Image (cartoon, rainbow, N blue to C red; front, top):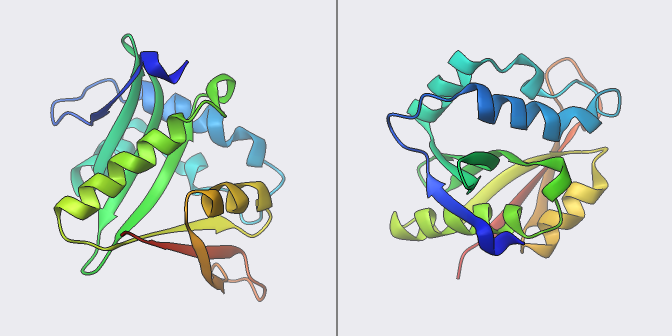
Length: 160
């Protein structure tokens, strides 16, 4: 199934921001009412996603001309922070997310960054397990501002 999917670097002239935005909202919808605080995905707009792409490197998973996955990577001094990994809900489990993550790994290697970092919400143990299968390990638990309990798990992967 994933053989008909192509992963591409987000083009600089990309103009169809409604598509990855809608994808992210669909992929993150199951979190509504499950995580606290709510996902920052709920505050995304086409304009804010465009701005995110100006500041970060994005990749799209495409089936024909349809956006079926995306991921963003923010470059830091010693690592890339991975965020907004989203795969069309009906296509999850078909290694599209893995292929998107591999694109970020290749970017990190090409720029000499030996580490990827991400955060998963404390309640999303399935996500934490999935990232663990991709080689990420938990490094700390943090709280969003205003919370006196951990709300996120920071996970890192050292690239070989």
